[in-house]
Image (cartoon, helix red, strand yellow):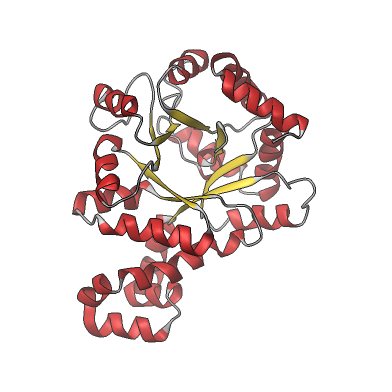
Length: 300
């Protein structure tokens, strides 16, 4: 994995501290050209990995990159699925059975679910995972997707339900169908890690909130720091700025000093902010600086 990843919250009006700012960003990035302008700024700054949801609007970004393969030949996507609002909206618009028909075109499997209810659905979980994942991944055809994430809304729900084997099913499907590594986004890193290990997922990739204030870090800062020190997984730090509550230099200096951080994912809506974050990471995380210089020189 690259040391520095670019996230997509700002493109879809997600801001955990300001609804007004979230609305303004959602309006600004309604057009794919505005999103591409920011992604181009990130690429020019040496950030070549885009960690994004499978929102329908990402499809237009994928189309633009496929249309210009020379410009984006080093660009990589880390999809995270499912985009829950897509399914919630489908249920609202078409009802439960209509939504199932839209996302599970296999009539035989759909009929079995309708006849047998949840008992059949649980028994056929592995079979259901494949067509759902294929539907989510269709937009990325022909593009590099070396890591595929399960979204935190599903990860933490499965964790709460005790549906441990679902994590192994997801991991196996990602490896077998897409030749990629599975990743897991969570709001509860201390609880998730032992569960993944229990089902045989060794050295997993876990993306979680990691910041100096303990902002949105379930279990508290101390428990999360203890898990990081264990070194039994690859951690991706998100929400490192605590939605703007921590000054950028203070936030980056702290997170770069933590053990076992494999990558940092951050979002920004302007090129100047992207470049500033890159400069701070270069200052406090020499390995990231060396990696980005190698990329610029064409040796990575």
